[in-house]
Structures are given as C-alpha cells and as structure tokens.
Image 1 (spheres, one colour):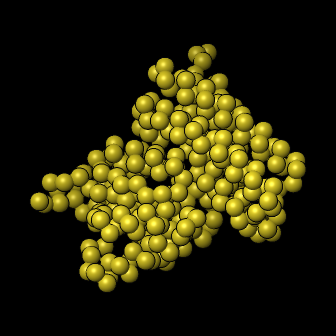
Image 2: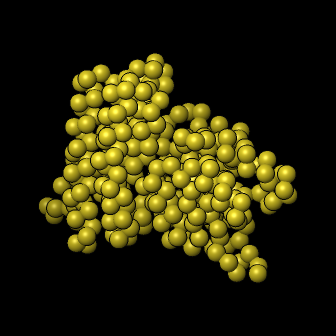
Length: 124
Length: 132
C-alpha cells in the first residue's frame, strides 16, 4: 500500500492543516513556523500558571493552545486541554500531577510532529 | 467607487496568533482584504481607522470577550449611523451556549474553529452584499 504523509503522524493531522489552507504548502509552512516559534513560551506560560496555582491564567493558556491544536488536527491534545478548561470552569480544579505529566508529554509529541511536518511542507 | 470595485474588507479578531493568521490567509484566498487584531482593544483601534464589511470575532479573549465586543460594535454603529458590519462569532470550544451567546450579542452567525477554506469562502459569499 502506498505510504502517505498521514501515516507518519500519530498525534497531529497535517492533512487537516493542508485542507484548511486550501492546499497551499507555503501557508502550511508559515502556520507551522508560527506554532513552533511560540511553543517554548506557551509551555513556559502553562508551567508558570500551574506553579502559581493561577487557574484563570491556566484556563486562558489552555484555551489559546486549544485553538492551535484544532488547527493542527491534534485531537488528543485539544481534548486534554478542553478537559482542563472544563475542570477549571466548573470546579476551579487544577490538573493533578499525572494529568500535567500527560499533557506535557503530549505537547512534546505534538511539537515534534509539527517540526517534522514543517520540514515536509518545506520539501513540498 | 462602487462596492463591487473594491475588495471586501474583513476584520479578524482573535488573540491566538495561529488562528488569526490562518483566517487571514483563507480570507486572502477568498478575495478579501483582511485586517488582523489580536484582541478587542486592537479591534476598536482598527474600527477608528476604517469600516469593515465583515468581522470574524473570537468569543473568548483575554481583554474583552467577543460577544461584549460585538455588542459594543453594534452600539457604535447605532450611535454613528454606520452601515452594520456582518459579524461571525468563532470559538474552538464546545460550549452548547456559544451560538446563543453570539447571536444574543448581535452577531449574525456563529462557527466552530477551525474553519476550512471552503467554509470561509462560503461565509464571505453568504454575508457580503456583493459577489466576490
């Protein structure tokens, strides 16, 4: 069976991004760059909000990151962020240590796949 | 200058850079001139400079929620006699009340993010008073 770009991605869907921009690989590169440029500061903002037990800031960060996640077709990340937002909204409850670890692990996978898809768009 | 002689001017208000940039790209592909604002304050500043045919407004933003901004824009239109701008509310969330909240604030349409290029083109065709 012929391998497609989607076969190499487990936590993102580059095809979703490609379709969203009407099949414009250059636009995909720009958007991937935008995501990657802010990845470190996003992670730092999440960690700061958690360290300070700042639920409002964490909810804002989760919401903003979820916007990027859905654009990237990162469904699992979007779902984790949505759950975090919902818990904060309903119970003012920060994610526990296990949920935090899972979130950051998934974020790392997403970042790596976006970096890889960025290279693939570059070659397109 | 008739309406058909210029590109539709569209305001994109979203605090998330990736979503904002994606929508501006899609609007460019749909033949529009997109102006980006990273929040309500920037949107209000843009409205002081120009009128827009259409606006896409994120519902949840740090400085002012999109529904509050839309209600404010409607008041400005009424006070100044501006031609009403069609407003599309956006949210990446799955809150059941989002559509209701958007429409109650005076928005004309509500959509979940992200929009596809085809959806953006269809919205532009549907809400602008002249063909693009």
